[in-house]
Length: 137
Image 1 (cartoon, one colour):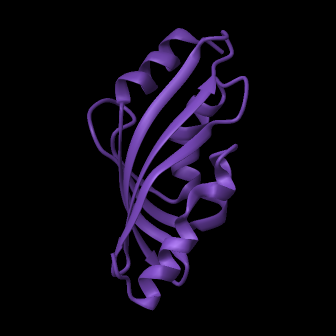
Image 2 (cartoon, rainbow, N blue to C red):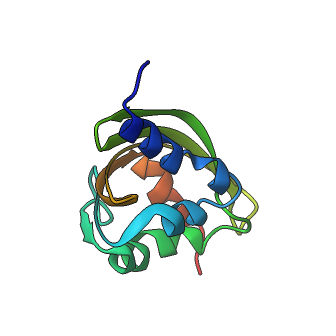
């Protein structure tokens, strides 16, 4: 597939290799602090978050707190269309109770000036809610 120079730069930016052993590095590296991020689906975590603080305080922190090790990711594909980047990834970790955690994601991210300014995330919310219910803090 042929990409414009800007699309190629965006693809390099969101290539997740630098975060493969700790997914939080992905957020830290390329998400704008005021990102508008939507988790698609149903349930209490599925909504639009306004800023990284909102996203971490109300969605990510509860999940990451239940891991015994950092959330590792594997990139399945990354594609570009202008300032839109599409990323398909899988994640895995071990929960505090010793059980595995695995999930799959599809992100559509809008980039501006080298940062993700908005996006939508699809994931297996059943796996997310299951670990929250199973591992009590």
